[in-house]
Image (cartoon, rainbow, N blue to C red; front, top):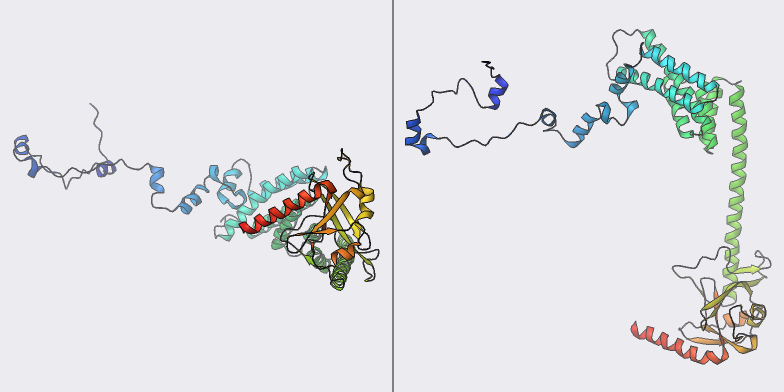
Length: 414
C-alpha cells in the first residue's frame, strides 16, 4: 500500500499540527457529554487559486499593471522591455546586430520606395534598441556591454529614427515625422537630417514658425546644406503667402464692419425699426444692403423680402427689394403663380398686409414705396427680412378676421 506524506503546507490547510495533536477521546466520553466535549464547528472555505491569491490584496490599477507585463495583455509594445526581450528570442545575435539587420532591410525597401514596408522594418529595430535604452535608464545595464557597444547601439537607433521619419514624411504622417526627428535629436543634437525632415513636416501643415526654427538650427550646423537652404526658401515663400492672406482677411473684415456700420446708420437715419430674434433664418449672402455701392452712404437700402400667400400656404422670396420700389413692381413679374390654377392672383386682384408692432395688421398699398411703408413707425424688419401677406381680395376679409382671432387667443392664453 502506498502512503503519502502530508506536507507542511497541506497540514496547515487542514489545521493539522504536531503540537496541537492529542489522544482522541473514547466514543463513550463523547456520547456522554456531547455539548461540553464537542468544539464549535469551524467553517471551512476552499483556498483561492494561485492566480487569484496573487491579486487578492491588490488594487485594480495594480492588477492591470501586472497584466500588462504579460505578452498576451500588452498594449504598449514600444514601452515594454519584457516584450522586446520576449520578441528578441526569435532572432539570433545581439540587440545591436538584430537592429542593424532591420535597418538594412528597411534601407532596401526605402531604395525601392516601399515606404510602408521600410517603416515597419525601422520600427522593429527601434523597438529592440529602445528597450535597451530603457533598461540602462532604469539602472539595469548589461554587464557584458562596453562603452563602445552602447555608443554603437545609440548610433544605429539614431539612424533608425531618422530613417523612419523619412518614411513618415513620404507617407504624409507629419506628426510622426517630427516626433521621430525629436527622438533622434535627443540622441544627437547635431543631426542635420533630423532638422531638415522636421522642418519639412512642420511646413507641410503650415506651422511656419516651428519649421523656421528647425531649419535655422540645422543651418547653424551646416550653413551650406543645399536641402536646408531649399527649405528656407520654401519657408520664406510660405510666410509671405500667409502674411498676404492674413492681410486680405483683415481688409475684408474691416470692410465688412464698415459696411455694417453704414447700413445701421442708414436705417437709423430713415427711422426704420429692426429686430433680431434668437434664431434668425439662414439666408446665405442675403441681407440688408446699400446698393449699388455698399461703401457709399448715398446708395439706396435694399431688403430681402418674403411674399407669403397664407390662403394657399405658399411663398416667394425676393433677394433685393429696393427702398424706392413698390410691391406692384415685383408682383408684376412674380404673377402669374405656377400653382394658381384658378387665376386668383393678379396685381389688381390682391390685397397686401404687414404685421404691426402690436401684433395687428396694416394694409399696404401696392404702389407705395417700400421706404414709406417701413418708415411709418408701426412696422419693423425682423432678422433683416421684410414680410408681406398677399391674398386674393375675395378671401382677404375672412383671413384678416381669422388672423386677429388667433392673435387674441394667443394673448388670452399668455
